[in-house]
Image (cartoon, rainbow, N blue to C red; front, side, top):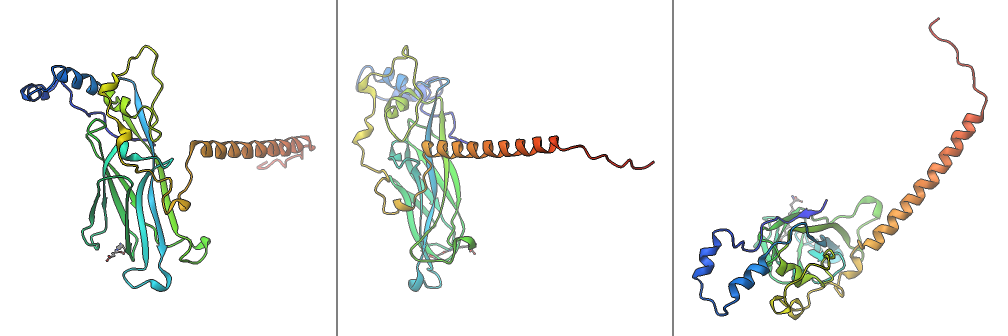
Length: 271
Ligand code: SLL
């Protein structure tokens, strides 16, 4: 299920913000007009951002103590490890109250936090978006897992326990400013627009490429990241379809063999 990050964002010049805007001193004569078109909402358009969030935890083995048996990292990353800083302004990780300062704020990408501890608990992750994206926060929940399942063998310090979830943040009716700003950014999926649609003039588009690189492509934990790419997903679906097809053929053959067998006369009961 895609996550929908609210519809209301940007300042709508038809509401109470008008008087406030009119009172501010304008440096350029066109400023009010420019703001209006940058904030204009695009009807029937959706922008989606594929994300992965989860934890990777290592058992400390000989170095483990009673209260620090594992070190772990919780994160929100782009499903293709691109820089999410283009959309997300801040992530807040809410830890168990047994941690010092359990509310941890991360103001720039990559949006992650590393800690050490002894127990599993639910981490609440709140995502805050840039002003032109959405003014509502998005809350995600992830259960920190430290101990491997029995079937994956005993705990080792080499192989971490990895739990990740894939989802897509969907922004309905994005502002033109947001659309134009992220249109060619690899972390974001935007629809192709009809040729008749004219986008904002270049001068009004915020340049996202100027920002610091915050992707997770060469991340130290990268080898443990799971693959959620669409191509991968399609391959899995095709393999599953193939398997079902083979099964259907086998069942059909069994059925026709049964049909070909002479009918056994059933005893008539109750008479
Ligand atoms: C449990 N309900 O009993 C859970 C709580 C809390 C884990 C787990 C704190 C580490 C620290 C820590 O790991 N708390 O003191 O820095 O399993």
